Image 1 (cartoon, rainbow, N blue to C red):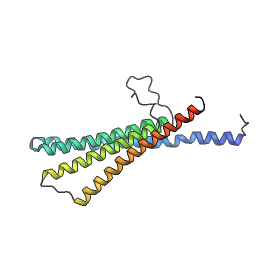
Image 2: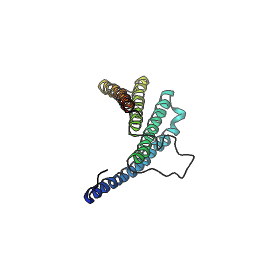
Image 3: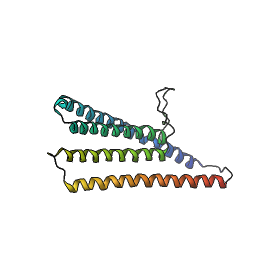
Image 4: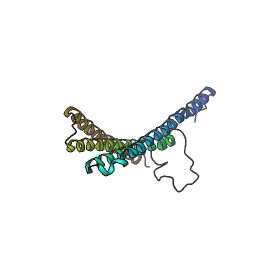
Length: 183
């Protein structure tokens, strides 16, 4: 190991401590959880009084909107927990049995896959909601708008598959490197 000069030590300390600049970002995302929760509750409060007069398709559309918001909430929570633990500091839950199993084990690659999976699911639900709206008959969706929704969904889906493929190739490369070094 080489002797490190004081400047190098100070620079490395500063770089390592700079990770705390991300902490306000995660606090902001927690605030966004509150915003999404507000929207979720708003959807329920608005829909519940109308349920007796709603058609089945309208109820399904409302439920799909709630699922969509739920996936968004889960997505933000995953980013907050795994991002903070991967880039800032480990979260001490005091040995709580409620700590999610994936917390602390989800690396950047796993977080990326969960993110793209959630985005694909949100996109699929939005697309399903658009098709359900078409079924209602009295509402119309612009063909161009629907076409772009399908194109975006296929793009998200293809991106997810490509991310998974890249991670798989990287894991094979990593295994081969470890095997080549006797480890």
